[in-house]
Image 1 (tube, rainbow over the protein chains, first blue to last red):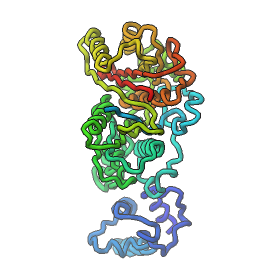
Image 2 (image 1 turned 180 degrees about the vertical axis):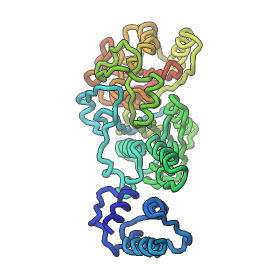
Image 3 (image 1 turned 30 degrees about the vertical axis):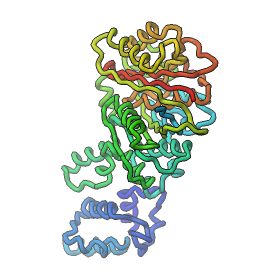
Length: 83
Length: 354
């Protein structure tokens, strides 16, 4: 999850945020890390670029991008399906 | 109707974000490019917003905020911006990714931030200003066009307070491309020696300067903008001379009434003649100051010159290292800015002390 946090920080240019500042279960949007809809698009691109994952159903977005843990679980599940 | 500058803000390769002391010392550089001295933007912009902004947007916001602060105004009636290059950094990022990623998986941020009107748009978003917002992209007349629009808004009473500025940035990409056109010096030159240079090319520059304009003079008033004119590709020297004389006559003055000529000479041997002729023929005996050794050459450098002229009039002080020829009188009441970009775009801006 540390790698994923570093990727999120780089993709979103989260200045002055370190990987250890982001809790595994901390909400990424609104009251948590404070991300917004543009960031959501950036995270979709991050999954494509780093993990070759395309989100087929946009309605899954809030569930997948809820926290770093939910993103990591989605990536792991997807990789198992492919593997 | 009089048009006053109520506040100014400037981000440039010099220490211009601090009004006092006014240009206490000139920052010296060696090379063919001057980079803006960037302030800590967190004093004006939330950290969450900064992360998406390119340098030019941040420079523009800082200059705009400084001018609003000085004028004591929270909400302008209009925001008008002049920029020739727009948001080059994000344009470069977006286009580079298009090529590298074969037009796939492109992220939105760089695209959103790459348009020319991003600077004016972001200023409006930060202020919550829903009023008239326009950006002029007219190459080396971008700032002059923005200024003209602002003056017309005020004269037609469509607005009482207009925030107007000129902003441009230089990036590694753009500098490389412009260098190929022979715009810059081949050998390194010190900026403090630029105006005495006799070789081809100049030094690239960048910056943002914003002004809060209004029609009522008050205790905060910095200077008065009396006149503005642009002359595009004059046929010959006579046409240029006639345009300058007509401009002065239209504003009820002659060259003898100008206390200081701020000249846009940039050390390019091929372009010096425009300035030398004007300085020696029409403004003989007039004190001449330079500014492009401070900010470098860029299409909206006249905005920096306007900032400089306004500050000189307000402080009644000509900082050291600016005078190119002549001797400035003790009292400075009227300043004429003459700029010329690549021999084609000539502009005149007349400022008065209030």
